[in-house]
Picture 1: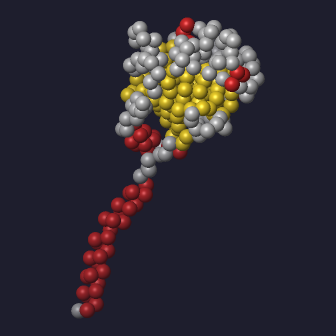
Picture 2: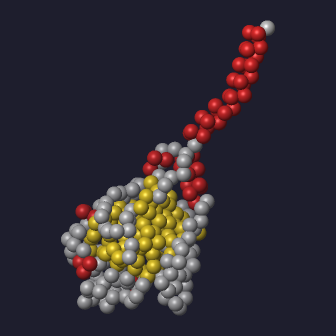
Picture 3: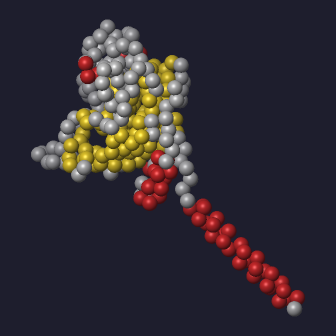
Amino acid sequence: MKHKSMYALFRTVVILCLPFVFMAGTIDRSPGKPKWEQLFNGKDLKDWQVKIRKHDLNDNYGNTFRVKDGQIQVRYDQYSEFGDQYGHLFFKKPYSYYLIAAEYRFVGEQVKGGAGWAYRNSGIMIHGQDPTTMKKDQDFPNSIEVQLLGGAGNGDRPTANLCTPGTQFVLDNKVIQTHCIESRSKTFNGEQWVRVEVLVLGSSEIVHYVNGEEVLRYQRPQKDPVGGAKEGELITGGSISLQSESHPVDFRKVEIINLEKYAKDPKQLQAVVQQLMAEKRIAKH
């Protein structure tokens, strides 16, 4: 009788523990919440490269890109005039699947000689070419530009638009060759901080967000076609850079979540993206 009682007790314990064993297995396989990686350390431009038109790589002409007060500042106080010297600050590492965020504000006055369209204008360049391959007189890297615009105080001027130096894309199942298209964002006047996030999923889809709101979505980023083709080579990844286009601008945060490890598992990628975008992140003033 004693042996039968011990066996019954053991069987009961095993049965009661089984659900917890299965639950533990399920929890271990679920994706954790990815962490933000700071591309800008708040102190200096370590891990970044400068390319300014008419100048060699890493010639930071006029101290255009500088760090002050914990911000990347784009300034022109050492320019006599702009002279179409468009510049870009490249992070050292290329990416393919990721969520990037930048918080920016436009300040001060445009430098003498800046184009009218470049007033309160900057950008986050994604899927870009390697800066070492840019020609000395090249104005913009071949890339997808997430155009950042500040309001002019006299009408609508959305931000997180899309421009395409050397590239094109697909929207509503149509190849779009128009150089710039507007997003659905509101206009941000004055010197307020704005947070822009860009979800980049290789060559499949790119989504723009402004202060937590989706404002633009498109597919199949690609190089300009050659030989009369309608579509060009798909862009799967590339450089990330911040732009200098003649108006002073500050970046106080540049951060990224690398989603590359989820790229080959569509269901897990979707789950992680849904988790990330369920949180509405807004720039604080």
